[in-house]
Image (cartoon, rainbow, N blue to C red; front, side, top):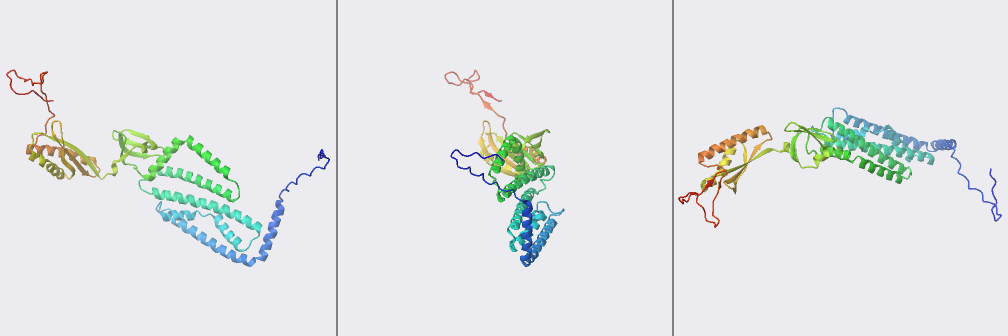
Length: 397
């Protein structure tokens, strides 16, 4: 032992502060054992009553868990709410059930402080972990309920649900760990800050991947289209063949297979032509300026009559504008359904019917014409013939 050096003033040095003694685990176990035995001897009646209550609680919780397992057994509809509730109940752990029963005994039978602290610690761990498990199953069940559709079966939804399960599990149990440490008296401020900084760093490093991933989840949950739908986006169009976690494959009408990232696809305006209930075909029909006004007035009714004769609907048939060389009429035809193999032949038959009816009515569909007048520098018209005939030169183009 080193000798203490006397102070310059001659006063004896102060003794060093006493060091805390190391905890004697064996002594603590002996104290806990003696306290527990004394507690049994003093509160044996309360312990028996609490034990009976605890047994009833354990029996009820096991019965609920069996009922939940029966609700979510194979063969039930995936995503049904009863199945979701049953799966949540079936995930109740034995550890939680036992700790609930012990906590009931602890609260009723006046347990010793040391034993009460141990029971509280174990019950806190069980309750936090069990709540995390229930929350995970409830979230996943709600997601499956949202995606329970014949349009979202197969490899895509299986891969998406696997990834969603991983992400939900990591987030839920990370929150549960923070809550558990906070309940045990640990300062979690630094841990939460570290997790936040780490999450930001990971997000920035993989933002492209996460953008496509969340776009895929948006497609799955929002359902702007599904496999087999015909869509138009930007200047392209085609049929959806596969929806992946990063990209979507579209078969173009010209035969090519186009692969486009999910985020780039959702950033554009999409036209889902499969969801429409009719096909609209526009027509622009010009008639000669020499057509009598009475005949012009009958043209809309003639067009509607021809359209209805083909089993379609004339959304609009009427005079549109004075064209450069014709009086222009607009005809909008709605064909029920979405099958172009029906719409195209109907369009062909309708055009031929219009030509026949106009010929019978004496209605002329003119060629584009242009009249050219020749003038002298002073503005006087120059006649095309030497004899001074008043005939003007007419060019047809």
